Every structure is written in structure tokens, then in C-alpha cells.
Image (cartoon, rainbow, N blue to C red; front, side):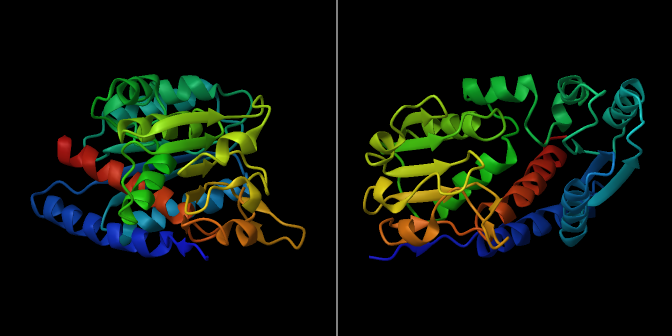
Length: 281
């Protein structure tokens, strides 16, 4: 048995085509979707991520604003800039790239972003809306994972889903989205004594801990859907996920590759959130 690949690149391009069409329709009415991206400091990986996000905006016809600041920028200066963007009618989404310099409180920054422009879906209000099943912004990576599962036609109703990881940005919201889809959900983490016990029973496994080979073939139920959120490097320096792809592929029914799986979907769902913000407002 060999698992069917869930191609994140292909699905991402499909969704971006739809986003571009809807953005063009809004722009024709005089309301071009707009995203503001702020980066503070000189973290090389962060600058790559930011460039990709700005380029993606241009590709789908969004207006984008990129603001780069030195690491010495004060917390209050950053908060004041966010407040100004909150009032800017041409901006429908605000993203502050993490991590921030140590003297800036990330929680304060996230909570200063207007709830109507929190397209990362990280605020307490967005988390509460997700918990309550209310409409709102979903964190981009879990949102993308759900789209990947949906693309297979797999019905989550009544299925057992295991999420490995409990972060506020992926693990917890992922579990809630699966629960909303009527799956029975188990969350595993570093305090779980026997991870394989849970994953062997799972119809769906989402691995999101940032540690390679967390999930191996002998830990997977035959035919399971496996979503790999991890981004790591193997001994040869090549990108890999949290899943031992070679062994799991032989057992699973569906699997996402790394790269080319979840990664492309994260920016795509950021675009989707920004578009929906523009459409609502």
C-alpha cells in the first residue's frame, strides 16, 4: 500500500485563483483588499517569510504595505503604528511577523491589532470565536490543514483525529476545527506517556511539534490521513517534517509531503482571511 499524496502546491494555486477572482470583483467596486505586514529586527527567516507574503498579495491583486523597522524600535512606537493601521480604511488585515525583539511584548502587539483586521487569527477574541463556533478569523496553518483534508473528500464525521502538539497557533485551534467537523479529537503532547497508543487508533493524525520522526510507520493505522505541519532539517540539511515520510507513506491512506504540503497553504489562508475581511467591511 502506498499513500496518496495531498498536494498543497496544487490546492494552494486553485484557491489563489478563486481569491484573485473575488479580489478583482471587489477592486472593481473601488475596494481593493489590503494587507499591512510589519517586521521588526533582522531575523533572516522572518524576512524570507515576509517577502513571500508580500509577493503573494501582488499575485492575487491585493494592495500590500510592507513596513520594516530596526530592532531598536520601542514597544510603544510599534503599538502606535498598529493603532494607525487599525484606522486605515485601505487596510483590511494587519500582520506583525514573529518573533519580535525581546523588549516587545508579543501578546500586547497581537491584542492591539483590531479584531476586524486580525487575519492571523491569534487574538484572544479570535480564539474565543473559534471556541464558541462563531464566525471569525481562523489561524492560517490549521485552516490550511482543514482545506487539505477536505480536498481528499474524506468525511471527518465520527472519525478519530489525533493532534500531536498543543500550541496556541496550531495544536489547539487544529483540535477545535476538527471538533467542529464532528471528529472525535485527542490532543497528545510532551506529557503524553504512550504516543503510539493514541496514533495507532487514529483515522486522522496531525503532527505539529517541530521534531522530526515524531510519527513513524509503526505508529500509524492503515489507511489513516496524515497531515505533517512540521518544518525541520534532516542530517543532510534537507527540509523534512515531523513525520518519517518513507515509513508512514507505506501505511497511510493520504499524506502531505514536506515541502509542498501544509507550507503553501498557510500563506494562502492568510490571503483568504484578508479577502474575507475586505468583503465583510
